[in-house]
Amino acid sequence: MRSLFWRILAAFWLALLLVAGLSILLGRALNQDTWIIARYPGLHDLARQWTVLYETRGPEAAQSLLDTRRQQYELSVQVLDESGQRLVNGTYLPRPPRPHGGFDRESLPRFPWRQLSQEYTSSRTEQTYLFIYRIPHPALQAWHRGSLLWPLSALGIALVVLTVFSLLLTLSITRPLNRLRRAVHDLGQTSYQQDSLARLSRRGDELGVLARDFNRMGARLQRLIGSQRQLLRDVSHELRSPLARLRIALALAERAEPEQRAAMWPRLEQECDRLEALIGEILALARLDADPGPASRIELLPLLERLRGDAQLLGPEQHITLDVSPELGLDGWQDMLERALDNLLRNALRFNPADKPLEIRARPDGERLHIDIRDHGPGASEEHLAHLGEPFFRAPNQSSPGHGLGLAIARRAIERHGGRLRLGNHPDGGFLASIDLPMHRQIG
Image (spheres, helix red, strand yellow):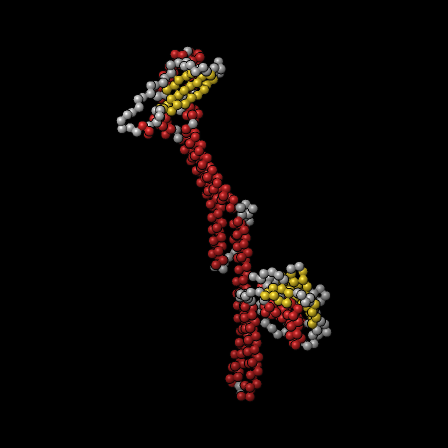
C-alpha cells in the first residue's frame, strides 16, 4: 500500500534536506578558496600564464604579468619555489596603517585582504610553484555581489522543483477530498451514485480505503433509505384496506335497522382486531431498529420448549420434535429472539401436515450456533424464495392469514444478534428456516 502518511513525511523531509543541503553548499561554495581562485577574474588562469612566461621568457615577463593584474584587479601576488624562495619581486603592497582615535578596533578585520594560496606544477619542467594571492575585502565583496547569478539560479531551480513537487502532492490530496466532499453532498441530497468514487476507490493509500468505506456506507444508506420508503408505501397500502372496510361497515351500520346493526358489530370488531394486529406488527418491526439495551444470557432449550408448548395450543394435532442440547445458549435479547423463533415456528405450523412432525434442531459449530426449523409442507416456489422476509410480501397463492411481516421481523431480529436467516426448500421436501448465530460474541 502506498501510504499517504509516508508520502507526506517523505516530501517534508526531502524539502527540508534539499533546502538545508543547498544552503550549506552555497555557503561553502561562496567562501572556499578553490571557488574564488577558479572564478575570480584576476586569478582565472593566472598560475598557468605566469608559469609559461617565467619558463619561456624569464622573470621580467612574469613580473610584468603580475603588475598588470595588480593594476586591473588590485591583486597582490607572490610566487615561491619548492624551497620557499621568491622567484620574482611580486606585487605585495604595504599594509595600510591601522586607524586610531574613534574607531572600534575590534570591529575592523585583522587584515584588509583575503589571502589564498595555490600550488601549480608545470607540465614542461614538472616544477611546482606556490602562488600566494591577496585580494582586498572591498574588491572581493563587490565581486561576490556580481557573481551570485549561478547560486541564485540554483536556488531558483530548487524552489521551482519544490513548488512543483508540493503542488503535485497537494493536488493528490485535495482533489480526492473534493470528490469525497461532493459525494457527501450528493449523499445528503439522496442523489448519491456509487460509481462517482470508483476511480478514487482504486487507489492504494488511505484515501482509497476511505473511498471504499464510503462506498459501502453510501450503498448501505441508499438501501436503508429505499427500504424505508418502500416500507412507508407498503404500510400506507396495508392500512388503507382495513380502514376502507371499516368505513364501509360504519356507513352501512348508520343506514341499517337496529337488528341489522347488531349483526354487523362482530364484523366491525374483526376489522378493528385486524387493524390492531397490523399496527402491532409494524411497531414490532420498527422497534427492532431501536437500542435494545444490554444483552443477557439466553438458555436455548427452555426457550424452545416454551415456544413448542404455545405452538401446540394453536395446533393440537401437530407433533413438534426438539433436538437441542441442554447446555446450548447464546448472548442476546430474549424477547427479540423469542419473537423471531415464534414467528418462524408459527409460519411452519401453517403449512406442516398433521401426519408428519415439525422438526426443530440446534447444534453448535465452534463459536456459532445453528438452529433449523423444518416443516413437511409444499415449500415455496423458486421465484418467491428471494422475496421471503421482505416486509408485506406474501406469495400470490398464499391463503393463510397474515400481513407478510412475520418473516421480516424474524430476519431483522436475527440480524440484530449478528446472525443470518436463510429460507429455502429442504432437499427431501418441505420448507427449511436455517438460523446462524454467534454464541459468545459481544452484541452491538
